[in-house]
Image (cartoon, rainbow, N blue to C red; front, side):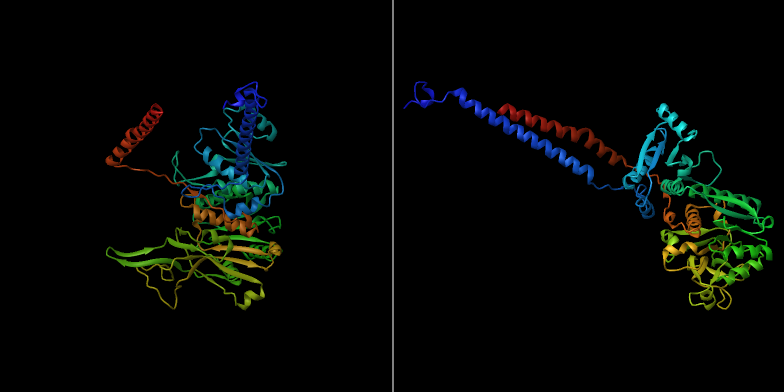
Length: 503
């Protein structure tokens, strides 16, 4: 029977063109919808990927992972901040700085605007920034601005170099987060804190005084406070304009007038004091004043003495640990540091001491020598032997914090007076200052001025890694990369070609 669709004279015949038209239209609409849905799916997935994602810091030292202190501060920003990366692209630090500041932008709750300027290539933009800020931008650095306040962090402030006097000193630590967060606090506060550096009381050497003042000034520049040298004999009172005072390695005693000035300052509404004691000092008045606050210098020497096959060995360089119980040293509690020179032990009043309760004073140990050291009174002997009646045994404390007027309500603790006492004067020596001691001093200064938000940010060590391969391993890598992998790709191509030929 003939097909009616092929017989044009049949009454139910369907023209081929009329039948093909709807089919093509349907196929076209179907393809269009598929393409549209695919595009929508593609855009949607990319949108979700852009807004919701996870980032991982795979660097060995977690160089780009922000500390909790920085994260907390970024979450509470109240004003917009602009950060300009003014770095030449060929700088060795450019990549680290760019990646670190990207973390600030991502966690800044859209308050931080990040821009990058290469002063060598982007001359026009660099000149515009110079005109707007009034800065020369003559070197690589980071410019942070918020309203009228600005702070320029130089490239050298982002690193810690090895001690010594060479022209090309190796970078040992990257302290970008510390510098950037401190600068953020600087531009947000809009004012500079002030410390008095007490001079004129002698020291181990003139160089020690210069080193200590230089080190504290550098820390101050990074932490947004200024340090002013002051001789107590030239002033009549320590005014409340001083956020804190620093006394490093004094060998001569305070006069009654000077001690009265410091005591009046301490008993005021709020005070901050950092003392680094020299064990070889002769300061009876100052010792008595400290003892009245719950910290008694014992006048001994913390050491490790033992008999060896080569004779008696006496070690004065103290290995010390930081306390977990005190907030501003918690971030250092997993670190062991070294106190050079000589150190004496401190006898501390306990929490049940009625004298301290009467004065509303809380004394806490913050640094102690490791348990192999003890406080020896007969430290001049070639081989001192610990005497349980005279010497100090572990735990041997070499650092303490003192707080007057502390209360449980954090919002009212701004009015408490705080002091940090360390029984070693070498922590700020230029030739021996190590990064952990610098971080400890910075944390102490921030704590005594009630600025806990900057505590807990440490520098990250810069490590160099070298992979050494044996000749056999080099040969295996050559065969895999030069022969095996190209061979696999060639084989797959031949299989595809053969399959198409067979079809």
